[in-house]
Each structure stands twice: as C-alpha cells, then as structure tokens.
Amino acid sequence: MNIQVSSEIGHLQGVIVHTPGHEVSLVNPELKDELLFDDIIFEEDARQEHLDMLEVFKAAMPSDGKVIEIVDLILEVFQQEDARGYFIEQLVKEFPEENLHVIEKELGKLDADDLLTFIIQGYFKNSKGFTLNPSPNLLFTRDLAAVVGSNILISRAAKKARLRESLLMETLVQFHPLFDSVRENAIRISGQQSIEGGDVLVVSDKLVLIGMSERTSFSGLIKGTEGLLNSGVETVLAVDIPKQRSSMHLDTIFTFASHSECIAFPPAIMEQNDNVVALFKDGDSIKTETRSSLKSALEESLGRDFNFIKCGGEDRTNQFREQWTDGANVFALAPGIIIGYERNNNTFNTLVDHGYDLMTQFEFVEEYGDKDFTPSDEQKIAISFQGHELCRGRGGARCMTMPISRKPLTS
Ligand SMILES: NC(=O)NCCC[C@H](N)C(=O)O
Image (tube, rainbow, N blue to C red; front, side, top):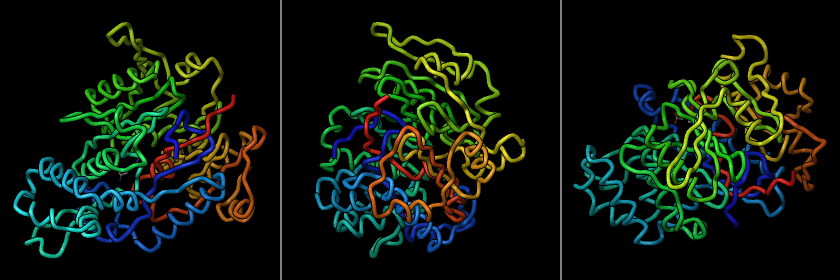
C-alpha cells in the first residue's frame, strides 16, 4: 500500500484502527482519570460498536481498500527478534520508575503474543509480580502518528498513560515493511517534546494545522513544524486552543467535512481572534505571522471560502454537550461523506440544513455494502453510528482512525 495522505477528506483507501480488546476491561475506576478515560466501559458493547463502525468504512472504501488492525502489524513486527529487542530497550528506558530492567531478560524471552499482551494488558506469566497499567487508549490510533503527504510524523505522547503507544508506533515505523517508504524521512520528536496525532490536520500536502493543546508542547510544535517544512509542507498554521481535558486535541473541536466545509465548536474556534500563527520557511529560519482567525487563515491560504458548521447547532448548551460527546470529531470517508456519533443529533440536524443527507450506519451498509461506493461532488452524506460505550473513552470517529492512504483530490 502506497502511504500517502494529502487531505483530510480524500476517498479513504487505507486506515489503521484498533478494535478494543480485554484491556478496556482492566480499567479500574480508581485509575480511570490517570488512564484518560471518563468512565469504565463495557468491553463487549464497545467492541461491537467499533466493528459496526468498521463495516461502514469497508462499505465506503474502494474494493482494494484496507482496514488494518494495529495489533496485526505489531504481531507481525514482533516476529523479528531485533524489533522485540528494540521495543523492550525503549520501554525500559522510557519508564525508569517501573524498574523494568529487573525483568528485562524475561521480557526478552517472550514470544510476540505474550509481549503484545504485556504491552496492552500489562501482565505476563512469570513477570515476578511486575505489572503495568493497561493501555485502553490504543483504541484512538489517530494519536499515534500523522501521515502528511508521503511522510509520517511520529507522535510522542504527552501523558505517561499513552507513551507506550508512541513506542509501539516508533517500532512499527522502524521495522514493519508497510512503512518502508516513510522510514528514512520520518519526523520524530524526543525528550520532553510532545505532539499527538489528534492535533495534526492535513489540509493539503502544502498546508497543515497543528493544535497548541494540552497535549502538544511548544517545543513539540516547533520540532514537528521544522520536520514538515523540511519535507515539502509550505505553511503550518498553529491553532491555539483551550488547554483542557474536554478539548485535548484540535480534532475534538474542529474537523473537515468537505472541500469547503468544516465542523467547528463555536466558542473555541469561531469566537476566537488572533488565535492562529502561520509558520513558514524564510531561508534557513522559520518565520511567523499572526492570523486573525482560523477561517480567514484557511481562506487566505487556499483562496476559497470556507463554511464552518456549528457543532451542536445554535443553542449554547447543545454546543457544549455535543462537543463533549465528539460532535465536532467527524471522520471523512470521502469529500462530503462523513461519519460521527449518532447521539449528536443537533450537529446532524445542522448538517442537514447544510445540504447533507442523513443515513444511519445500517442504511449506508445496506445500500453500499455489496456494491462499489463512488463518491461524487453532488452528494453529501452524514452517516450516524452508535458509540455510547466508545464515547466514554472521550474520542470520536476521527480519533479512532489513522488514515495511511487517501485518494488525491481532483479539485
Ligand atoms: N484525537 C483525539 O482526540 N483522541 C482522543 C483521545 C482520548 C483518550 N482517552 C485520551 O485522553 O488521550
């Protein structure tokens, strides 16, 4: 598969996901805040909701499209002894407080399955009593990396609860053949720097948005920007967003729906001024310029009008309620073909006002499951899916996807 993503909306051809497994059942309520979950979630229902979401992806994707489970990639890569060794070395180094050096030898003897279980669920037989917290957030594959054009920016998580996922992603890029084409030029950040994929929105291969959030540090933003500007991106728009749990990434308050439409949470995006800084190259240095708003910055950069559709509609309480349940976090399967949680009905009604046809996940799969879906410029569809358990992990459709291949846009 050719790794290439030059927009947020091009027809989806390849995506990495993680259908939740037993790790979500290991979240003790006492640890849920530390593990970045807002509630404990019921594994079986969460898994079914996720699998049903994937059915929509498959119906919308071309027949040769690929939905790839990240654990399959990890198991493949862990067949290589040097990949296991590399991962274990990083794990021991990055988590000194866990004293994993004491069991480094035992870890080295684990086969691929047992090592994976240890990483995701936190235990293995003969672990001498050493356990780790589970990794329930692997579900949100978006945050592990961002494919930008034909490059990859590997995230480094801000929170310890997610740092193991960053090491997994780094190991995949280093060792899995899927990433052969991006390995050498991969953009990496290190040390105290942090950046998470939910903060990176690929408007085009020349223009990228990066959220300055509670998860993306200033040094992470600058290092990531340097890497992008050195690999063909012309402008990064840094978007200052509230540093708080409810909007932990830019994509929790802003996503793209079509060539000229975005879903935005009004208070944090549409009602802000001077909250965007453009970064671009000037010789060997990076120059910055303030932009008055995200809308004007996008319009100026792309030379066309944008329509920001309000998450939650006009009512203030609904805007806040539906942002909280990821109403602004839609995932585009193709231009104008988006999917989001069914519960955000005010957001869906607002999309209808903007010319979207509403379909449930079941209607969409019934209609397109057995025949090719060919997106057209005339058709806009907002697909609703049920995610009452998934939603408690505090992420929506975009958060649960890492696109690695999208068709280039024609217009
Ligand atoms: N891109 C996203 O917004 N991802 C959602 C991440 C949710 C996860 N529980 C976290 O707090 O990191």
